Image 1 (cartoon, one colour):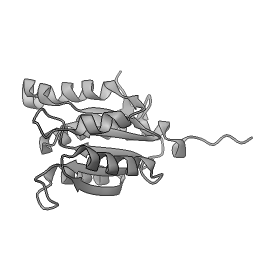
Image 2 (cartoon, rainbow, N blue to C red):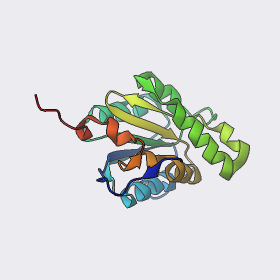
Image 3 (tube, rainbow, N blue to C red):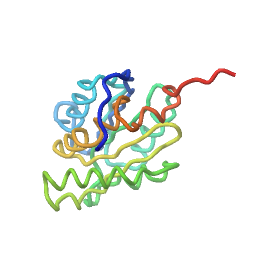
Length: 180
């Protein structure tokens, strides 16, 4: 039997920051970032921060590292810059900051994406990992890809009631405190 939501458990909202990486998107045209914000808040999580930066390694690293160092941010979601265009530099910017990688995320994302866009999913270099104590998930820039990532992978992974385990159980602020 696959994992499931155990409604007898308490839901613990995550504090999630959303970073859109694009040379062309603005707050008005950022449909992928807006889709992520809609889904995360709709699921009961808190939007910790939101920003748009150009496809520039230094700009991306500055925002990502700042959020990773902020104890008020549990998870960072990026959208954009994971393809093969010359300006797509999200992996080159973020991967050097990772202390651990989460290879399974890309596998599950590609399985879900295969169902909606077919083999075009191969053109995404999406990935996930951990920077310090924060987790980061780097998604493609299309609104459809962000929906697929949330609906088929992240929604359950971010729900503290998901069993047998979920990402919130790995966050120090949500782990049971042991009395000494």
